[in-house]
Amino acid sequence: MLLTLDIKEMAAPILSKNKQENFAVLQSCNDVELPKVLGKKMDSFVLEIEGTNLHLNKLSSLETKELLDDTKIVIKQFYKFYDILGKANYFSDVILEQKMSYLLKTLYKFESILHKITYKDKNIEKTPEKILTGIAKVNLRTLSKTKH
Image (cartoon, rainbow, N blue to C red; front, side, top):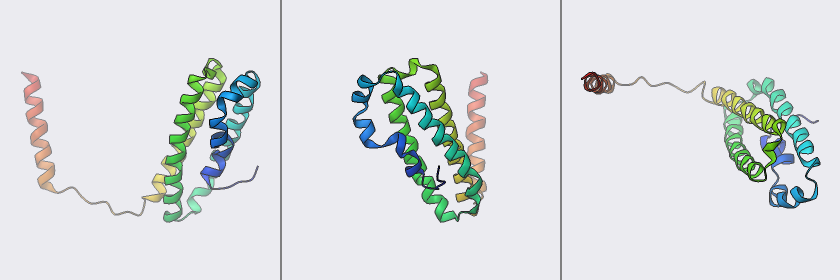
């Protein structure tokens, strides 16, 4: 397994468009083997993601921003793939569903690390006192209405 920091390349064995388009054909051809093969690919992808977490701090903010954008795209693609698996009734295999859930959890952890690195050097602007006072007044009115 080659370590790469290209999330799209890492997800390609599972999410390639060719496989999604031909998913119905694969489903009818090899109903028993497909969950096993898919499960192994998911395991490999999770290991790659977890392995790259240690190397993210070495990237610049610009590199992590690009990787963060790609990761958001991959997460959307995995949700589409999740729907495809659900419609094809592959989640009757509990192990495959657990692997998919863990894969999504791992992707979100990866995304949060990238987000933290990308925006750690950004200046935080203090909210003006006028806005804070306005919010406090609205909250006070709301609370006084709910007590009566």
